[in-house]
Amino acid sequence: MASKKGKNTGENELLSLRKEINEVDNQIIDLLEERFVLSRNIDSWKKRNKLPILDRTREKAIIQDRINKSKLNKDFVKDLFELILKESRRIQGKL
Image (cartoon, rainbow, N blue to C red; front, side):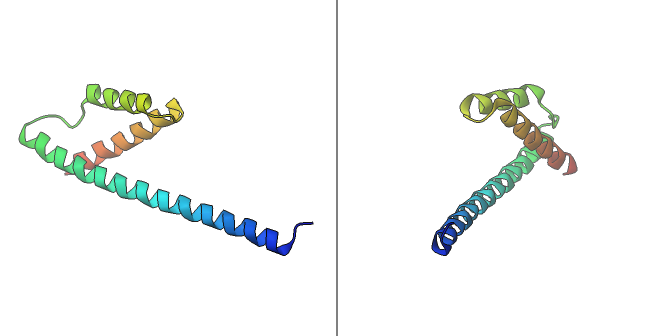
């Protein structure tokens, strides 16, 4: 049977790891917010230059580049960036 001290140490380690995950999650959110601010700036530029919101060639290139640079599962990276780009288009369409 595990001692109380051993159990507390394990629980403290779990709490510490979860705290680190929360911090990383917050950084991800902050970076996405920053990215979407840039998307708004791009939208303004596209409107001034009479360009469409959607650039499929660019989006495909972005996704492939991120897949190539990542050690993560390729399908996950593809799905993630498709979602990010979809939100960027939604934001740009609202302005």
